[in-house]
Length: 182
Image (cartoon, rainbow, N blue to C red; front, side, top):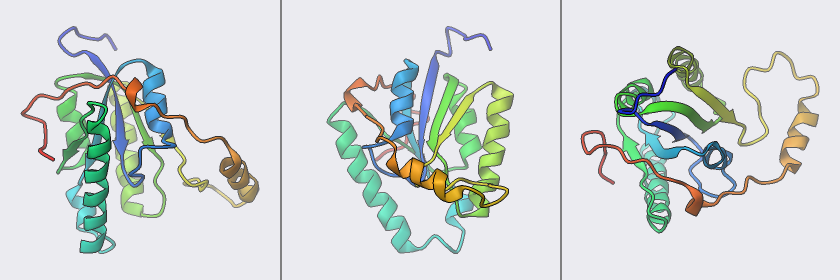
């Protein structure tokens, strides 16, 4: 994919379930990629409508995002929050930037997020975006069997934490038309 000067290249860190800023492999990978970075969270209507999502769950997410925004603001970094489906968000961002990398944690547990992630993987392939998902808890999605799963879990749990330097993040800025107020 040729990069247009009108659409500079960026990396995106997509916060899903892992709402912390330390030991965060996606942020560390985005810094290492050497491009400007967009940090974002997406409230997806299709996922919010699931019975697993309660008011208490929504309150926890909002409080976590507020805390993240305070921590990021100390480094001059915005956290962009969207209220639409993930594919629509990435499509909108791609009108302003050439998305080169998408970094996130691997989600497990809900079929709805698995199906969404398969659709995002297709979108990334079609747009020539490298999507790298990082395990967050030692559990791997879509294993064919349980052979050696405990060994893989222990290897993951004993691995070094991701070193994250928020001051090393070079922030990209979204136009006001896409920005969501805090």
